Image (cartoon, rainbow, N blue to C red; front, side, top):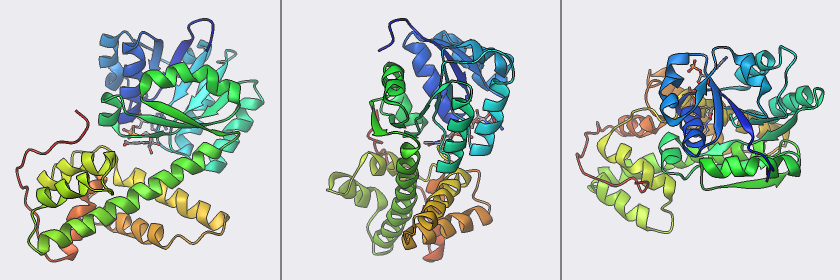
Length: 305
Ligand SMILES: NC(=O)c1ccc[n+]([C@@H]2O[C@H](COP(=O)([O-])OP(=O)(O)OC[C@H]3O[C@@H](n4cnc5c(N)ncnc54)[C@H](OP(=O)(O)O)[C@@H]3O)[C@@H](O)[C@H]2O)c1
């Protein structure tokens, strides 16, 4: 636990970064936020966050969090952050990126004497609002202990899995499971419906069963009422399946289900379903099964509120 309150810099106010920085600000942290599209971050001011006009302004903060999209974007923003003389004491990188990217980042930061914690997350923006985000962390143990009070402000907990980039492979495995699980849920939901079971009734049972989870519960409203407002884009999920398949090749692990799911996500993107949530895998599965789904207009809980 740090003896003094740390000053926090926050890079990236997208769907995830906005809610995460918002929780820190609401919890009383001293947060300075920079987002490429500044307007998106403006509402964070009402929670007490300050906004930076230029990214290097964040370099004078004690701890800087980063939540952007891909490794290429992380490299770009961290490069700009460290362009001047000032440097933070620690960088906590939360985007879902590759092991190799994370190791390259560690090399860049080690060379400048900046502590680095790799801390990707599980949960979407709604999960963050409900206080249920979780982190998986790797890097020096003392960096984790220093970051922990701030991680705790953003969610329900964090797991420390060891040194180096170990958290990256855990997160990649998690998102491979997320993709495969969603496709599998789409298949059995369409199967049950074609056999005559309404989706809300089928999912009510699944959610109460031993295979129900926070994830199946919070995807239920989308599956029942076909509300596919984006929480996580098909492109970002495809990136994670690709990271999983790359890791599978590197470690010589066959991943037949991940491979098939990656291609189904690609087909969905190819058909133009890229602006909606990745749960549109359900619609693709229905079309492949010769049915067109309609909203069931049922009030179903998401298990979060
Ligand atoms: N959404 C989820 O459910 C979820 C869950 C767990 C993990 N993740 C991971 O979390 C990360 C963020 O996801 P998200 O859903 O929040 O994505 P998002 O809504 O698309 O937000 C992306 C953020 O990154 C910024 N950005 C991207 N490229 C940039 C660049 N080159 N320079 C500067 N800023 C850049 C964007 O700035 P602008 O606003 O200017 O575009 C925006 O703030 C991804 O790695 C994703 O895989 C997402």
